[in-house]
Image (cartoon, rainbow, N blue to C red; front, side):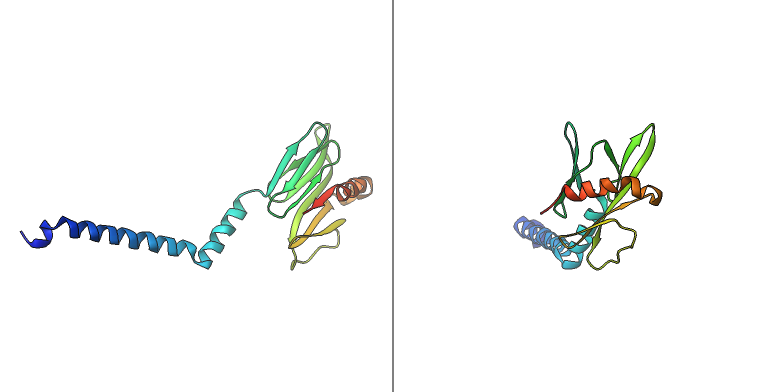
Length: 151
């Protein structure tokens, strides 16, 4: 038998070196800036940034990524995970629907928005989803504006 087949110490050293090189290659591939940007964008696209706390009287909505929270007016409910829709439900119908979303600072803002607040890295927007109910539901937009806390 050749000498290399009998020398297990050399085989083990080569195995450890190959394993170490493989682990380093995987680590390097994941730690490159492009890979980190891609991974973090996938995570932020999948998960909802909102944490909803239910108390006896209110719903407290916190955006844990952007660092703000607000208390919904009484009887309001919410739908959605990334772009929230806030509404009152009466007799099985949605009333006073309010869309809420976060704009990055460079994005354009539509004229129809009723409440726009500056926040970390962008703007918070609360707008009435149904333009026919804007007069009746505008008080809820002002109440949300009053109860928002930006960190």
